[in-house]
Amino acid sequence: MERKGIKKGRKNLKGGEKMKILYSILFTLFIFSCKTKSEEIPEVINVIPENGAQNVPLNTSIELFFNMPMDRRSCEENFRLYCDSIIHKGNFEWAPDNKHMVFHPDSLCPDKEHTIFLSKNAMCDEDMPHQNHCGEHRNMSSDFISKFRTK
Image (cartoon, rainbow, N blue to C red):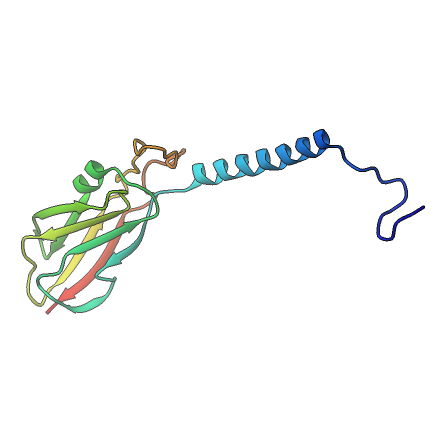
């Protein structure tokens, strides 16, 4: 007797065969996710103040958000905030996941354009526990530059 919706001659899969198919699917998904992560390149995904911002208060801190955990030392060494030829000094603060860096400048130039610069030599943090995100690309693919003007 043929059941509706089931073609004649189709066999039911036994438990072991079902498990083989399930493992095959899961293995394929795992390989795909590993490949995708290893191809990801570290980059700045957001900045505060935003590029082109005007009338930024003089007490503003600079915030960079990354798509993956970053190496703190390499980011701090490759970061610059300047107006005209003045490079601003200040201190850094990081979120525990190393995806959010804040630079607190000692001062900003009034009524001047400021440039936020992070060299492509900034690297992802391959030492974060339980992370395998750096893959083949440790460095950013290009320099990050953003500008804003103070009050």
